[in-house]
Image (cartoon, rainbow, N blue to C red; front, top):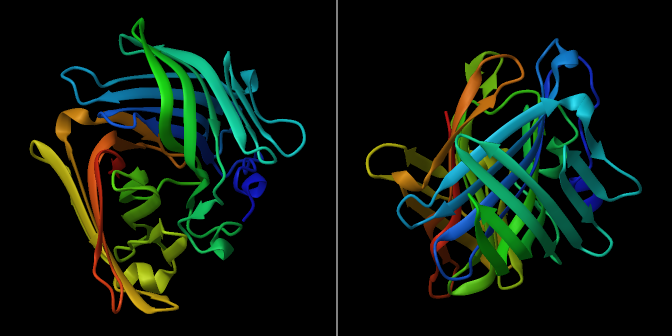
Amino acid sequence: MERREANRLRYAGGREGHYESYFLRGNHPERGLGFWVRYTIFAPKGQPERAEAELWAAVFSDRAGGTVAAYAAAPFASASFGGSGDGLNVRIGDAVLTDDPVTGRGALSGAVSGGGHEIRWELSYEESDEPVLLLPERFYPGRFPKAKVLVPAPMAAFTGRLVVDGEPVDVAGWTGSQNHNWGSQHTDEYAWGQVAGFDNAPGSFLECSTARVRVAGLRSPWLSPMVLRHEGREHSLTGVGAARRARGAYRASGPAYAWTLRSAGAAGPDGEAMISAEFTAAAESFVTFDYRNPPGGSKKCLNTKIAQCTVTLARPGAEPVILRCANRAAFEILS
C-alpha cells in the first residue's frame, strides 16, 4: 500500500457512525521522554450532525510528575480533513497536520489546553520507509474488522519544539511514526505496542497487538498480529491464522503494567522465524483518555510512550537476536 493510500481519509459522512485518527508520536533518543499528538474525527451512530473533531496531546516523562495530557473537541464543521492533491492536510482550529507522500516530509503545529495543562507543538518530520500494515491488505477496504490500523510513516525523524505548561522542550533527532486508524466501532479490548528504533538496532521497527473483537455478538478468540522489520527483512504475522496461533497476555494492575506475546513462527526464505516480545511500563507513566465509541458508550484508554520492550528473534541455524528498548516503546491498553 502506498503512503498516499494509507493516509487517505475514510470518513464519508452517513449515519453508520465513525471514528478516524491521524496520530504522531516521537521519542528523545536517550532519555525517557516522548510526545503523542492525535487529530481525530468522532461521529456517533445515527447522528452525523453531532460529529466532532477532537485534538489530543500528551507528553510522557520518566521524571516525577512529568507526564501530562490535554484534550479538546470542536464541531466537525469547524475543521477540515483532506486537502488538495494527494497530500494529507488536516486542520482543527489552529492545529494543523500536513504530509507530502512525494517528498516524504510532514509538519504539525498547534496547541491544546485541558485538565489544567497546556501543550504546544511546532514540529516537522521526514520519512523514507514503506507503510506498515498490521492487518492483511485485503481487510482494509472491507467492513471486517470494524477497526483498522496501519502506519503510513514508520521511523519518522522529528525536529522542532514542544512547550509543556510554559516549559520549552527542544526536539532534535527524535524518532517515531505517523499513524492512521479508523472504523465504525472500537475493538472491544486490546493491547497495542510499537517500537520505532531499538537501542541496539536503531533502524528496526515493531508493530504488534493482542486483541479480541465481537463477531455476530460473540467475542472472538484472542488474536496477536505482529510485524517486525529488522536488517532489511520484514517478518509479518498478520493473517488470521498466524494471529490466532500466536499467544499474548497483558495486565493493567499493580505498580507496573506488562504484556507478553509470542508468535507461532513466520515462514521465510531461511525457514521459520520465532518472534517474542515483552512490554512493561510504570503505572504512573500512563495517561488515561476516554475513547467514545460510535455505537454508544466509551472505552478506557491507557497509553504511554516511554515503555520498555525486549524482542527475541530466533531463526533456524542462527543465534537468537535480542532487541532492547529501555524507554521509547509505545504501549496502549483499551478496555
